[in-house]
Length: 286
Picture 1 (tube, helix red, strand yellow):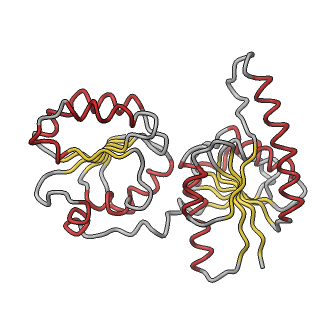
Picture 2: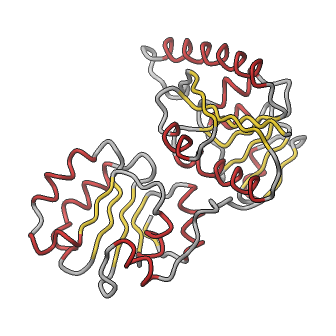
């Protein structure tokens, strides 16, 4: 049986491609023992936990662009992460390591640099963490051909496109709207700041929300950080418009329904959404 260790986290852009790959692995009937390693306090813990995958967390921190006061502490966390990674590798004994993004991958990749490593890069240009990991990666998989320019000529780079989750199956729009309790006749917009939310997008929406609700339904995924503000913002909406505003802090299982139900998306231009919106034929303002 294949023993696969996945190290990814930080944002949905790093987490969801790995989940998609694991879903394809299960669908192919390949038998595998999988352990996911995330960062301490990372948003990936709840997402991976819902998938029933073994999960452990290690210390990890970014170094690029960090101020001089924070740098020593981040270096210490990275060193602790390497030690924790070595313990995990010793206990789990993986056959291969797989990375899709996030600083949590750096200490694990370094600790396991003598083991086979593969990485998938969602973005055209790899972030700093994946650039470091590419030093030890045996196989690099990318979304577009333009990404080849960022890797040394001796690296095996394969273009495969963006892996979408098996749960993202488009539904007929009337069926999706009925399942979400939305009007089937009114234009519907999704406003979405990515897995962590985007305060600038949230605030821009709240400023014009009453005007928008006169003409359309709005599904608003705020992210956890701004969720406490939703009650106060919703209180300013006219009572007859309340049902047209559907805020959520985050959505785990119903994204396929939401993508199928809406006519337009306003969101950040993350790698995950750029890979998933075309699956649903969604026009978007990014």
